[in-house]
Amino acid sequence: MIACVDEQATDEVIIQNDKKAFEDYLTTDTLVNVKEVYDEVTGLRVIWQELSASVDTVKLGDTLTVDYTGKFLSNKVFDTSIKDVAIAAGIFNASGKYLPMKFPLGTDPNFRLISGFEYGISLMKKGDKATVFIPSIFAYGRQGKGNIGPNTPLIFELDLQEVKAGPVQ
Image 1 (cartoon, rainbow, N blue to C red):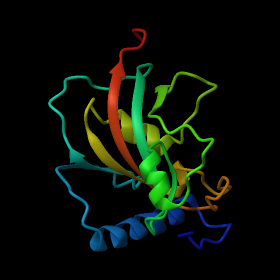
Image 2: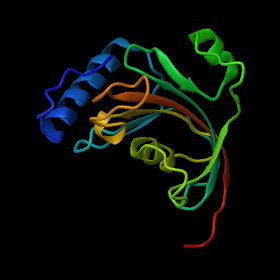
Image 3: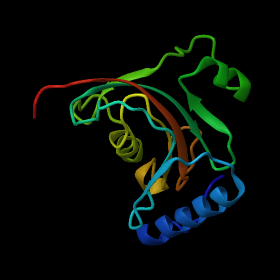
């Protein structure tokens, strides 16, 4: 789903439109919710499907290993690290690497994630599974990227598999 927003619309209007789209999505979806964090100002929302008993929290500079699936509000998958999900969604690429993504959180200038993804993963603990609702301004914004159009809110399903402590900040 691509949000229809005038190019001159303010960031506040875009966020309000995305928040409404998320509310509409959540009224029709049967997402398991064992914990939720919602930032009313930004519209960022994280809903946990599974909470681990882990004490391994995420800190800036930690190296994280995460399986993910990125979706539009139509539930159409646009990217995933999981081969079976890619096949089922019709986006499988034989030359693709379907492995959990491994990255240092927020410290490598050569490896940047969208800010909404980093926000969501930063709230999780090792073993948690959660869904992050990312307003377009915290995703690919007004410019979009590839098959993600401008002003498109996104959903990421995250499975945080490993947290390796980074350098002490």
